[in-house]
Image (cartoon, rainbow, N blue to C red; front, side):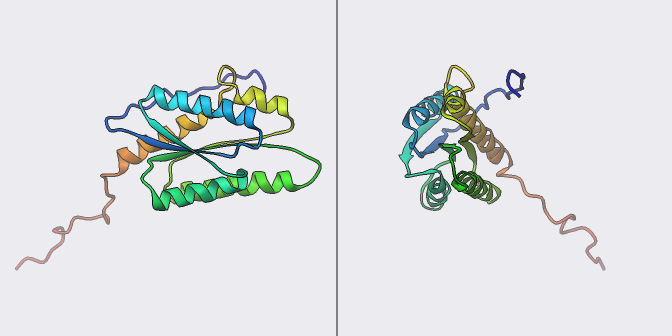
Length: 172
């Protein structure tokens, strides 16, 4: 709902460096550039560094992230793109499949902020991409950073199997 207030979490704090990869589909370059600016500013706010790669379209974003997750050393990823509804059902395919791909990667443990805008027109995208307005690029970067913080928090813990190895041992 337009104009509704919403809560945002405070930025996470890191004691070790964070390295993000921004994966952008610059089909609408003005929108992409604004979202990149927002994402970079969010990363700088917590002392993270960013690399940037471009892919042809939103459908290629999950594939590029999957390759980076498998072949590189990034802590997290920021997916940036924009899909504007057109006259065909291609919009639905791109929206659904790019989102599904990112979600599946996240469920496998990748820390991803989804900043792929899905809008009705260019004006809606411009408002959402503007770092001085809705700043969805910055929000996507912060989402990735929060997931990285959670992953680091939980990385050294183990759940165990419900009992201690020495409990219930037979003693003669």
